[in-house]
Length: 157
Image 1 (spheres, rainbow, N blue to C red):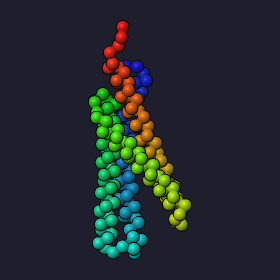
Image 2 (spheres, helix red, strand yellow):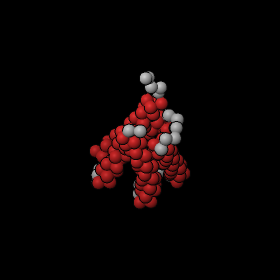
Image 3 (cartoon, rainbow, N blue to C red):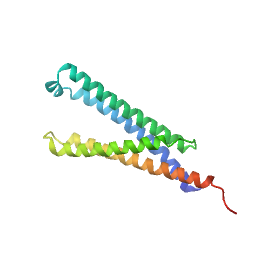
Image 4 (cartoon, helix red, strand yellow):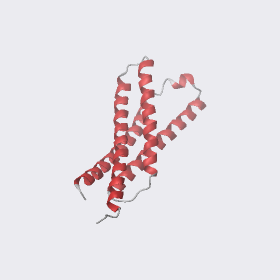
């Protein structure tokens, strides 16, 4: 195995770990913001609507965490030579698209809300970093698969 393939596999393992770490970050970010910023929504919504909104938000955060965990574990598995289906790559692309959309929404909110932008800017930087890691994971996973197919192809002598 040449150095380029080993490097791609090592990068894929590291990127898989990064995707899982940002999944944990997202989970903790929403948990802490839920504790800190509870006031505001209860002025607009009644208790039943607020409970339904909380359930929906936690389901989405949980799905995001589980999706990132699946992608990260699958990437780490593929980096160690285990064959993986393309399902985790499809999930990665879908999550990448959602992340791009989320960054655009954060960018819009940065300029439309009158609150201090510090928290929004920090969150945006972290989300951009997580999206870059996800994009690199997709590129490296495709590269590892191409190299594997090329090495498995019969060589002509």
